[in-house]
Length: 311
Image (cartoon, rainbow, N blue to C red):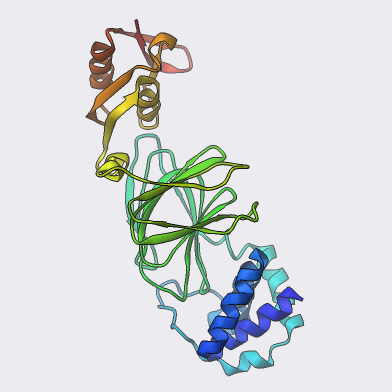
């Protein structure tokens, strides 16, 4: 039933919606999270049925309201059949581009739609753009996106069960195991979890959201300059603003092969300052001086160089 309704809506979108239909569609999408996914899948299936667009043309801008009256003649059964084929061959993900960054590598790139992505160290992304949606799946790591405006083609970043949707804005997503955090630097994003009935939350510039399994999405305002400090990695810097020594060491370990370890009595001590992400020695010596400790370097078979900050 949902797929049949999605088929009718997809056909209506292709020939152009009236103001009343746009309001009715918005209400239908809000009724159930499955409706949005069904509509996106159906629109992608319809593009596959059109032999001229069997594979998306990544460089061709998507018309705001393409007019294809013949979709009214496509049966729901035909669309359902193509949906099965599309899902089976992985049209959403498997045809996408995989982006992997090594430890210490920070990469800036332009995506096919004109959006910009700055990808942090140790990150894995899969970018799969269709004519209906711009989809980025984050398996691990962190990336900042400056999204090219295209209201008809939503830009969605998936991190585990969480979804972050933007139209024309800039935001950062950092995945930490099963949790994630989102920092919005420009515009507004919408965040929700596919594993929750909780309604989507809107997060605006100057705010950030903490996403944890089994918990309500928590949003809060950031202190002035806090987002610049938190995103200093884009300039290959780490800014320590009253961070604990344990947290600071974990940040450096994201970017360097040389590992930092902090003795338990010093883990909670606070440190300040800013450093290049590859300046492990400078950080270790400076932070040890701040907390009245010392630095010991050892080599462990199979692990390489380790720097320990000790009392």
